[in-house]
Image 1 (cartoon, one colour):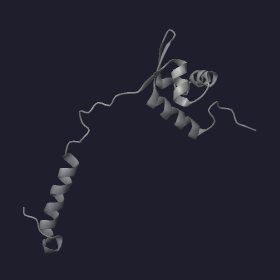
Image 2 (cartoon, rainbow, N blue to C red):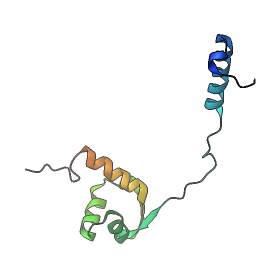
Image 3 (tube, rainbow, N blue to C red):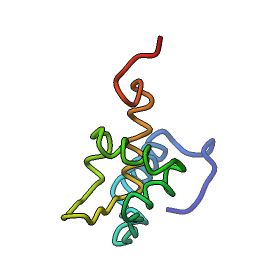
Image 4 (cartoon, one colour):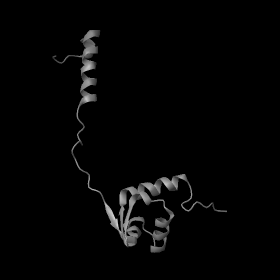
Length: 105
């Protein structure tokens, strides 16, 4: 179909063109398909300290609180943390309330 101005189209031509555009937008493959995103990991309590910008004691307290358990893999003494997930989980927890579950007076 050749290009023409919207004002020059009949109602049927307009709806046909609209259907074509919608079908193309809905069923076109996404540009990010097949692109692998590299995960960012930090290792150990020192890695948590660097990620959150806190002390070792605070990093240990955050780890023990269970807030970021979904982001942590631990085998023996080796701690591996998915940094992006840990930051997201901590943000969600901070929005929900106090990190330690205690209210301040």
